[in-house]
Amino acid sequence: MTPAAKIKIARADDVAEGKSIKFSIPRDGRPLEGFLARFQGKLVAYENRCRHLPVSLDFFEGQFFTQDGQHFVCHNHNALYEPLTGLCTQGPCEGQSLKALPIETSDGDVWFIGGARIYSEAMAHVDLIDVTYVPDRVDAPDAVRAPPIDERVFEPSLVVPHEDEPALTRRTYRRR
Ligand code: FES
View 1 (cartoon, rainbow, N blue to C red):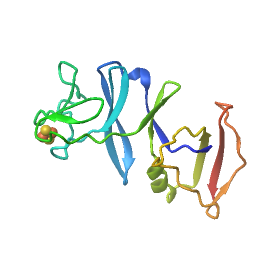
View 2: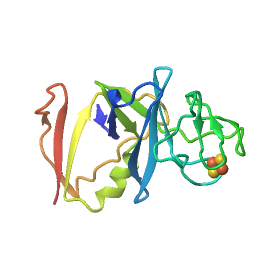
View 3: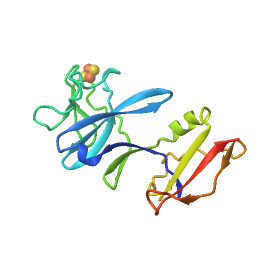
View 4: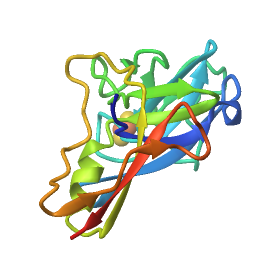
């Protein structure tokens, strides 16, 4: 068990086949916009940033799919991207790929994995940290882990069963 370094971004049911939604996560103190889409039954997530120029793909707010639903399109200069790989197959950035965002679906929720940077950024400013421990199913060697919490700075409580989900545990850390 390790502290979860992930952020809930949507309910899986919110994204029907051929549909997409946008979400935002903090990065380097600023919001990073991504989009979540379902193609051929699979959920994928990418940064909402074209590889031709550093601008959003969805000139028409929230529209990422082409009309035939077979590609993502950048509405600025019509670059086409494969939904499952993010590869640009036509347009000024042909051969380059959208930046994929790692996600995981669990119990109908979709999570962005790798929020550890966000924890790190927030830690200098918070007085209370509330950690839920979840089974660690992220086995990628380069997975981003939650940062260690300095117990000289934060006093840990006892680990207790999570009140909403007895299979999980939680504890708080309060600034000393
Ligand atoms: S900015 Fe996306 S194709 Fe030019």
